[in-house]
Amino acid sequence: MATLVLIYLFCLVFGLSYAIISALLGGHGGETGGVEATGHDMGHELSNGEVSFSPFSPIVISSFIAAFGAGGLISYYAFRISGFLNVFAALCCGIVIGTCVFYIFYHIFKVTQSTSEAHVADMQGIIGEVITPIASNGLGEVAYIMRGSRYTAPAQSADGKAISRNKAVQIKQVVGSTLIVEEMDLTDKP
Image (cartoon, rainbow, N blue to C red; front, top):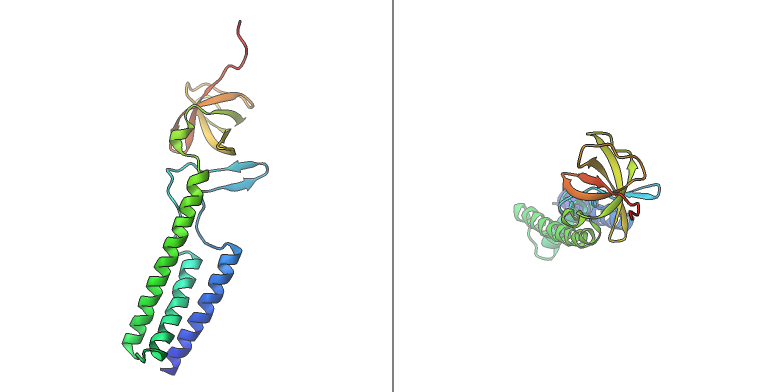
């Protein structure tokens, strides 16, 4: 049983240390919606609002390991449980704590993502600017501003015609992650 106590102690120290370091350094291990800093633009993946935080992220796994160690030590020293029941109690403790940590971080990311994510339904009618020319019956790239943030996305002309760089376009619909846009005429007509 002394070996098992050492394993529990190692798991507790390692899991706690890793969880603290991971939390402080931001190592949650989950994608946060695809936001990347690229120069002055903010690239952004279009999605349907799903949160992408994995139950196998470093913070969840380290919390499980730490709780496994703590649960094993507590059940052995405080409740005098030994053998298979001790390992079972440690596993149960690890699973419960790991699950709680996962749901806490999942809900944190759900709140933060839902406030800044570009929702497809809100994009129709937004005016953007072509930053990579759209080829005839091909793709280009459009930048647009939504809720105070600048986003970029692949774009295709609604009528199949080419649209040159720096032209104003209006988003007509979104198919997958591609914007279907229509060139706007911004000249004043008498």
